[in-house]
Image 1 (cartoon, rainbow, N blue to C red):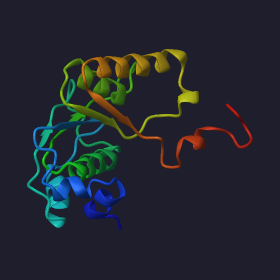
Image 2: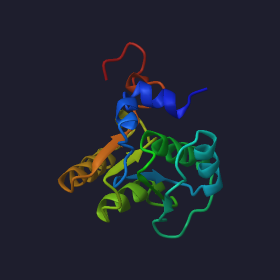
Image 3: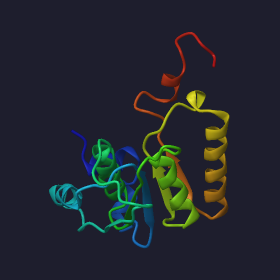
Amino acid sequence: AATPLMLAQLLQLDTLHTSGSLGAGESIAIAARSNVRSTDIDAFRSAFSLPASSLKVLPDGPDPGRTADEAEATLAASWAGAAAPGAQIVLVPAATTAATDGLDLSLAAIVDHALAHTVTVGYSACEAALSETHQAFYAAVYQQAAAEGIAGVAAAGDSGPAACHAAGSDA
């Protein structure tokens, strides 16, 4: 099982952590489709002797509650706090509507309202599977984030970026 210490070593954060740079004064926003139990985040932090949680939950629109995506949101908030134990973690859950994925609504709200210094999206879809309009949305929101000084971090997928491509395909 992975631990925050292992994560720090893997990401070469251990030197920063040892010197006392734990992310104080920084903020990380998590784009999500689900709310979480703050007690789960607290239990994770306690189990690994991390400072008490500074989780802030700011739903975009009506709170979607805890949905099937709760585990993903919990993992993202827990491990962001492990990477930067002193940072303010901001979870922005948003419900999917008939027209828009909740993840996209959350990401747009984070950037539009400059809710954090860093925004992270832990899952979505392969770029090749997205429509041109959806690709344009992501390009625009990440360009806006960069212009506002917000760092964007997006997952490459559990199997890495090549998992989006069919075997033997260059596309």
